[in-house]
Image 1 (tube, helix red, strand yellow):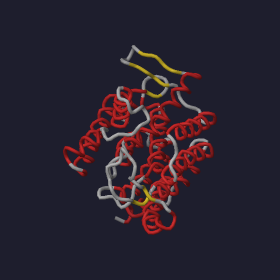
Image 2 (image 1 turned 135 degrees about the horizontal axis):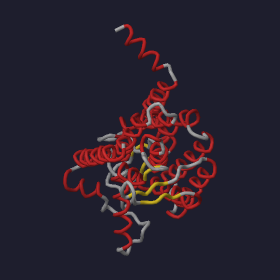
Image 3 (image 1 turned 90 degrees about the vertical axis):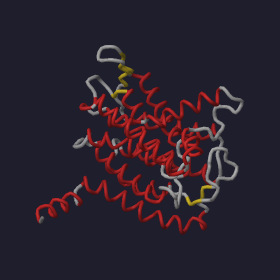
Image 4 (image 1 turned 180 degrees about the vertical axis):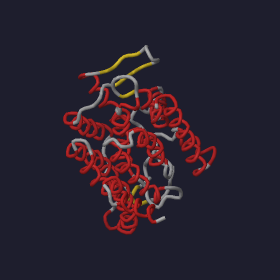
Length: 318
């Protein structure tokens, strides 16, 4: 028992331990402060005028707590930490400004593209492996790969924002998607950032889970989507995850299965309608499940589906 206590204490005081308890503790402590101080600073998620949100009450925004919790981890353990941190903060503040004052869809998209372009200019990314079998496929590299990585990151930002329609849904899906990567990359430098991100999202999920006391808001969901899609690339770029050069695209698609599917269906649905691609609606997967099952059963159903997809990705690729 004494050896176990000593080992646990040693871990908690190590660099690996700090990546877990620091973002978890910071988010857990700051969230109640945000709930209390939200009226003074106007940090509210207001559903009025939204065609996508199903909640009818104003809730405090929890995104700032997540950003503050993850900031030290990004600076200490991120690859090329300054560009990564600046890009993450730019994405977060774009969403936060949209939460408070409102931004046009094109303005938000341009800001996201600018943040991702800045990131790609400073951080190297592995080639993208697109393999249909052990021998059939191709690899994207060079400028074409960078364009695709940019598309992937911007898509990830928006897909987690689109799926953030029920209490705890976006954060829970992110955690489920990242956990397999934490396991397979354990001992690699990227595992520290993976563990810290999971811990930070877990901290805010305590307050965001049904019935939510605060919401992620666009700032929080943008940050979750940005870091999750980035970490999928970096986590899958580890040698243990693929027999081919680069990161396996199909593994990434399966790991982000529900956000990817929901976004593709939304694009298809809006193109075929008169609303336009950037117009919100209440026809997302979670909206339909909510109408059929209710709030908590809908969230848990999507958790289960995403877990099965994560297991499938592990079975096929790891």
